[in-house]
Length: 174
Image (cartoon, rainbow, N blue to C red):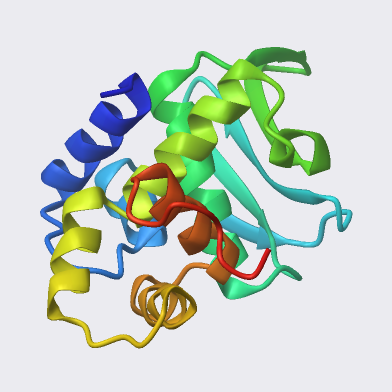
């Protein structure tokens, strides 16, 4: 099991989350003490993590769809749990992780790991398998749609998670 999966499981256990949907906003604020700020950002920027000496802030692009905002917050929690961040020279010592169109392509090791953490946090394997056993579905596409609604993630995120978990052999609709 990858480090990101283990870290996500630890956060879920500490938060006491047993059923979907997982609320990354609640986890960030109540469990981790993070200040969440929804704000205007360039469209290709989903969010950012800022670590100051006395507080941690996750900024989320308020114009993005709610499910994308949820994934962004989970992604930033992944950075918080797994990575030191990059220093940014300002008036105070601050570390920033920025989620933008480049990080969405997942070519950087830390971005790949933060994406994996976000998927494991929002779509935990055990919860997915429990939901599947209780669902009636007519096709793989129907399964993806029912699960994405239950877990409050995009169809694409659910599709990839089911493939990565070996539940589906290939992404549906491609």
